[in-house]
Length: 522
Image 1 (tube, rainbow, N blue to C red):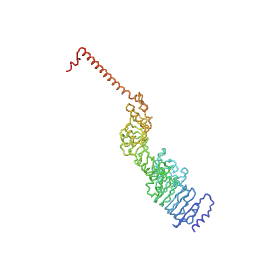
Image 2: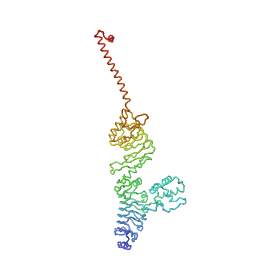
Image 3: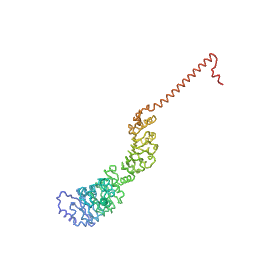
Image 4: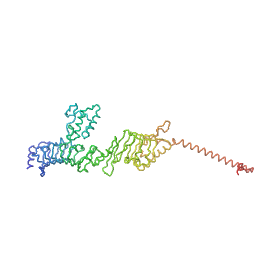
């Protein structure tokens, strides 16, 4: 009987409209057995006695747009399933369905759970009497601030951002009050910001307990979902390729059971995290954010799919005017630390601080480092994969310490260029031997030059091109000359003694007189 009613309603509207699409509709009235039939989505609002429907399932509809208002008459709906269709866009919010506890929107092509409102440039917004209306305010917001507003950041932060970005914008008490009212509307998550360009499609489903939005094309899930659905007990996010970022960290702390979490992954929007299980990715992002040094920027660099292989991150503290190494660093990942263009001079924390044990790539170009003292024999130096000390104040390096480190890390890369190297006999000899042996490790040998000194023949010359004779000749020639003089004197003295002996022997044979020195002997 019920099927006859459905078919009668469907036939009464005809099927000649090519824009309509036939799909499958399964209905349960008053929790009875489910009945399925072919139908056109456009006829759904005309169902007889929709208030009796407790379960509704729509599938195989080949339309790109879904208007959720078609469910408005189904006021006693407990379960709604929209499965295996081609819906890409929601063009409005779901109506108030106070009995709806389970919503499944799976196997579709939705890329957002938000519906678009008029653009903020074209909206006719009211003036609150202070001379500043919402339209003016939203136009003043930069793209970053507007996106932050949509993502639910704190009202006062948004307002501060607004003032900071508009230097000519006078701080007005009435304007500030209006701003707080507008932005706090978003924070409270009740009806949201009254004129947002986007709005959550689930805003009216306050009693929803189970939400399944799996296997769509979703990439973002803003924090407003957490507030829109206060009674939610379970959510299934699997089968989407999420843009795992700091804006989604809240999901890990969301007190809702997340079904099939092991099938929920990050997508290509964050290439480093592509294919990584979402809870693991967000946990790494959260820890990195908490442990990142003040004023520095931290980002994941590599996250292997296997948990057995450690993730790596980059800490960027370049150009901040730092005079010493950061006291703390993230400890849960392998680190690359960029400290270029600062004023750091002391490297001893590298050997002594536990926060540097997982640092294996360090870039200290253009600082005030004059010595590597304290690093000799340290575990940190032995684990280094990359070390750049270009444009510092190094004049000498302990090559014996680096020799030991390069034995442990044969593939390590080191940059020493553009430092004022001392080019004396012992330094040049030692350095040239070291550079020749480790030419594959020292990546900028051609930029290692002797310090600039007026009147020095080797000033600014490449260390590898300095002739040893030019730095060692003076000291060695002086030593050789003294030795030669001593040897000549000893030779002459020896000849003199031999000559005197021969003379005395001749006189003794001729006259029998012994040498006078013998008469003096006791």
